[in-house]
Length: 542
Ligand code: N01
Image (cartoon, rainbow, N blue to C red; front, side):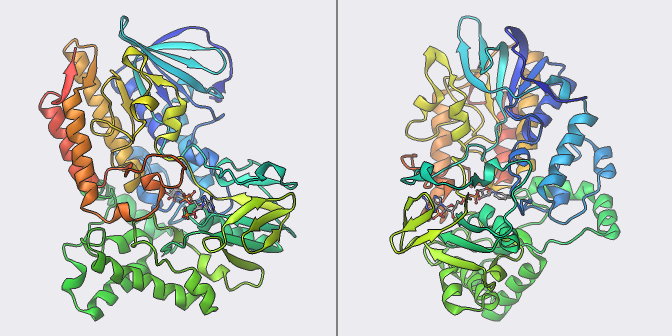
């Protein structure tokens, strides 16, 4: 079945509209249609499935969670787990996209997805008790349920540098990368941004380009990725253990199949701590974040991990001044999302790579021929913006969601999100936001958080149907309790200390709040289950 879309559908009545056809939209469609038998329409602005993995095609794009657990679990299909074989420990973007296309084919999902279609408005009709969803091509669909599956990082952030549009050469944002790729051979390139994306792209661009200027504002604690091909033995061991692997992902705070150690960093000797960090470092990936249970809470504990990571930078980068510039000093470890690096630090030992400190000398303007900072002008052929996203709320606001009395979600959240469980909001009956703000989402291995939300929503809709109920909407008091709990948990951690996109600091004017819930996916799952078991405690049902 080929992707369909682009045609103007003037009127359609559905049970549910889902916005987005990435991991969450695909699984939600499957559950609504195949588990509950609901007539469901999915919209996506892309021309195929994939979400994040459709758009982020920049060189080096790969997942920072290991491939065997960055996928659908046995909740979707045990057979699929046995059939699908990942070729690398950390899958690259094309492989994840192929996987999602395969899922869409295998479960006949394409037929209910309308591609190349932008949702421009979604309004709740109180009299009819239905959502009316309008699309950019003039289409109009009504539905009982509106479910957003728009991902957390799907609206790109392009900083408003003076002169940006005057640049004479090509420029790209990593999150909107051309499908045909970009040939940097012989070019002088400026890459702005050294987050998880820049850290992946820069080594690959440096292999091709004549020269790369890396414009860094804040250095990160980049963790060794340790990517390698998967062997047949790896594949067998994983496939034999999937049941246990998924079970563990559901019992851990981050949704990983490994647990955070039950010990504090300062409870062991310096030698033992070093040994523990070194072992986690050798194994690669985010394991180092789970070596002690107080790294996110205790500044002194955190500093031990931070210094271990700075020492790894000094080991890898030959020029000590460059190593120091790459070493974070202004925020604790893991208070910004640590990138995984595969050759990033070594890239700075190349003659064709220059690290530019745009914290000390900020970018003042983009000129016709390059980038001018407070200190110098860099003439370049191409600019790559690895400048991130208006995360978590950016895309939700673009949907034009209006609830009771025509009040917009953006209006309601003018001072920051206010939700119940990060998945529903008072004033917006029958609206569900998969991995919405104030849910664990980006602080977890996303597919596990997505499945938890989709399964919870599915159970909720089944509950309503079995009891002949039409609407569900959180009560204001329950919402306030959730916001208070979210804020209290946030304050027990070091996360508010950093200017990260997790707190909205990357977008001028965005309310400074912690957007994801940091209480842990395991605890969150229990809370959601309790709410359901108590007949959807905190919700008005009608
Ligand atoms: O975006 P970012 P990203 N002047 O916001 C800089 C996920 N991800 O696309 O730190 C100068 O992290 C900014 O500087 P600073 C992952 O969750 C997942 O890299 O604000 N610089 C920063 O260096 C990740 O966290 C995978 O001082 C400016 C960079 O641009 C999230 O996506 C792979 C600037 C932006 O970093 C976002 O990562 C890749 C300015 N005006 C990414 N504005 C997976 O593995 C911004 N910057 C699944």
